[in-house]
Image 1 (tube, rainbow, N blue to C red):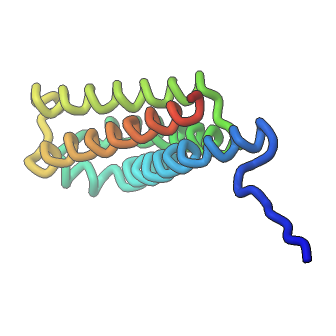
Image 2 (tube, one colour):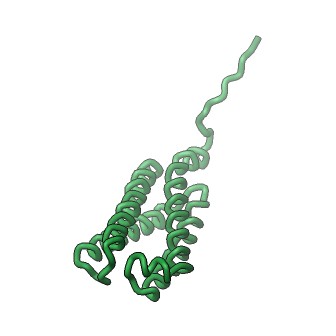
Length: 144
């Protein structure tokens, strides 16, 4: 009687890279989904969201359009079997910049949001910074 053993590890370099990229792809896909949905909410419901956060609807529509397009681009990156390290670094840097700008907005009271807005802005900054941290770890695993 003979037995056959198969390795759980991919046999090729491309297969190993794809397996190593799986967590990064997941983090990018989650970022893309949350960003695009948030963008669509800002874009399509700027009036009620603007009333809630006490922010200008034009500002929210502009942010919504940007976030929707950004989310789609991040989704395209996440769809790659092995996402580009350069593009992933650009996403990480954009996320970190967004988080810092959001905190600065809250700290300096730019746009004079309501109390809900003042709470919402740093909360969403924390989520974006969290995505950046997860993506940094995923990219480190990928590039070794």
